[in-house]
Image 1 (cartoon, rainbow, N blue to C red):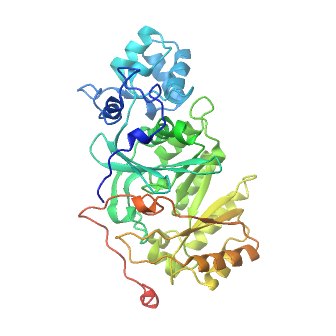
Image 2 (image 1 turned 90 degrees about the vertical axis):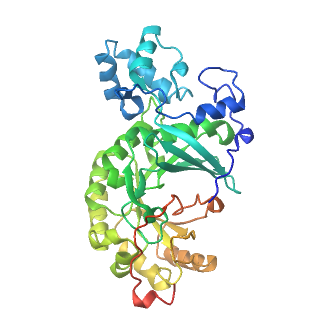
Image 3 (image 1 turned 135 degrees about the vertical axis):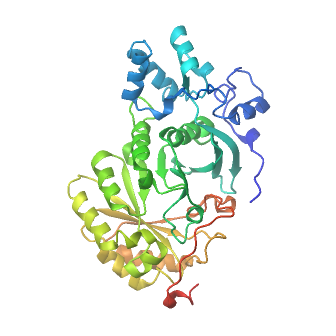
Length: 409
């Protein structure tokens, strides 16, 4: 897909906030240059500078102390990075800090982990940001505005993905790299920095971009804790949702260590189908996955898991599937999110017709479940669910289609 020019002049973000680091009166051309400046440009040749957005607050406090400064100054720095609508990306934006403290940060730390490569605008207003990493790969982040006053940033946790889900474009890439804590956090920082004036508050974060978040569990738990910090980005834990294809040990760890919300990508009601479209099921099958959730959620109050269910025509969308789904989730506090499959060149599946999705939904509602239907957003810019990434020449193999589904495909 050919990249579009960055629609910079259509943003309403003011120059005073989207300022170039060298000037508060920078022209749009200079602002664009600042956004595209490589994240490593200020890094010293030895590579020994600390990446501040990779630290949680206690680590930042310890680092500040180790540099010979009062720990109290760490909070001022933390708020420059995440609070007070500052979202500092360069040293000149560290407003209000002691001169010597700021000089030390300039010499010994980096503030920026990502570089904006491009921003694509879909016909429905969805934005897809392409970020270049320091070592070359590109990741994608999606900003989804909503008329009801909620704007969601969908962040990536890996370059590519090892899970090889058959309906997912990212899965064609295989796993190229785990993202660092800083590379994950900065996606949310950029979302607020670039689009808060245009869309209002960025209220929600979903870990539903490129990658399997629980395959990068250490950095994902740390990044999500930074996002919900009261003195920092201050997202509500209920509005930060981490999605998984079903890595059971990491799922248990997440429920014990994080207070953020959980989504499980279910997508099938039998092991036969799930083994095919989601190979992780061969290791953690439906009985183990759902049994673990049933046990763990008994220990949590006022907590419901979100089950995501991508509707694939002729594969998982029969009324028998709907009835089985009702039985499968019995005893698990949950909501169901029905998602229309978004076609792409890496898959042979077809989307379920809208009228059949509604019929499927009605069966679930009659069975006592809370059900939502997620509309496709950004699909004309390959920004919708399951469309992120660029597989390139090397792609993971498509799995053999069970004989009973070959006609459907």
